[in-house]
Length: 119
Image (cartoon, rainbow, N blue to C red; front, side, top):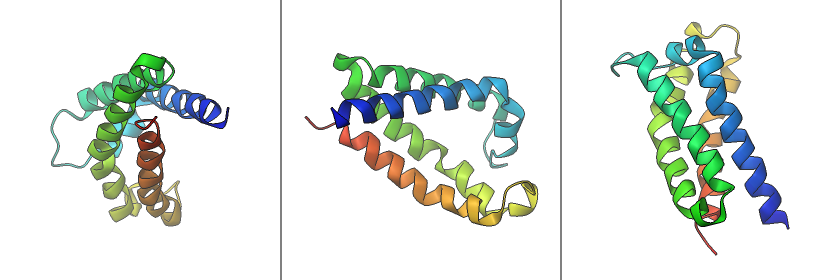
């Protein structure tokens, strides 16, 4: 029962985060490292994959591949979170401690998603 509840929680969190990429794309564009191309397009693409991954977690035969996809996505977006932490002056509305806390949170989310790759 706990695993089912946590599956739904993670799924809903990713769907909500993905939808937010379309509601507030400017925020996500701002956190993109300058060395990456097509900031706006990458924001939308990552939003689509967050939504698909979140939904996939909730469909039993897609849970495992969705979890692996979310792990890959979390690794792919890590540079943006690192960029935020290294450039807090660009994000004056967020305390630096919050920016740095996002980095280990990525590890927690990866571990959480990994849990769903196991029976």
